[in-house]
Length: 478
Ligand SMILES: [Zn+2]
Image 1 (cartoon, rainbow, N blue to C red):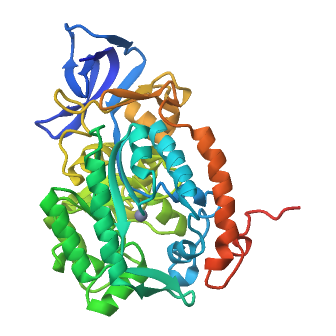
Image 2 (cartoon, helix red, strand yellow):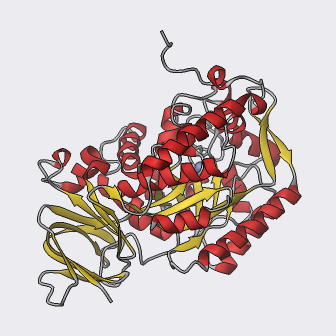
């Protein structure tokens, strides 16, 4: 038994269970013993093995990221930011995924280690990691110290391009079935890990690349095991058109028909609903289906915003009853920047300053994500909850004046103010440094891994182009 006391914290973002929302507390103590919060109030009288002076600090719940692909997204730095295909309604997903992918597990390990460091440094303590299983994944995740929801991806079909008008589908159901079996084995391995911090999410990759039966069986496996379920759904206009062509219904309606919606289901990214201005399908009931069923949405604004896409609108999803969570679908893996971007874009989409506020995004990035993952013991600071917490340095210049430190953190300072991070009561970031992993070494390995990936691009690209032809540098080299 080891007790840590954060004494007399200037600000604490505490959970008000009655109101089911976060509230500020001033000048209180936070004590945690082993993996659980023991006390959050004025005047802790117990004994502590370690005392942290809470002056100049805001104590907040660790953030929960419910959608990420750490094994490949860091490899796209300098490649992905401005890549898209106009004839595919601006998405670069299909062209990029075919031309550029990690060449080996060393590349995947470098990407994952780099991303895990970025995530820890911005205060993420729980992560849904959607990746093709690779050797060393479970061990590296455990080493990071984060709480892991490993989501091994699999699919019945692979996208490939014959032209620039949209993806074609290479169907191979035995490969999908084998991937499903392997995914459940990896999840079992995660659940059995002695850290006790690892779990799993059943993750058929995309609504359009999995057969009806694989989706139904995946949903059943998740429910039998009490695990969350996730799939990419309504993430591109091409996908919506393809599902209407196949089934006469939108992807959300197809998911509903297959019984996929409901508590414990996370859709990434449910952005192109039938009401979206880029879709404008006649049915206009996608959002109601999400809300009425209590389905969760993993909202990751950055990759879409870079293409020119925006969710319409986050506030409407909330009011419809959808469980909103936040994710990092690309680099940088900075969930606080996602919160900031999402709040601004939500107001642009709604044309309404009052459509959302920063508390909505804190909720999404903490308690909302926890609900999506069927957990009520994370994403909130209160006695009995997991000791996953972040110490924000109010003296950080970008936090000053710290009149409203949540606004200061989300709109101004972000990761620059994250001083210390604890997961399960164990410190994983101290004084802005990750204690568990080596980001500098990961960056070195990532650089050579990106070179290998770029060199292989002509073998994979449908026009056999070199990387420099697919994605030229932003400026000519003089
Ligand atoms: Zn994704």
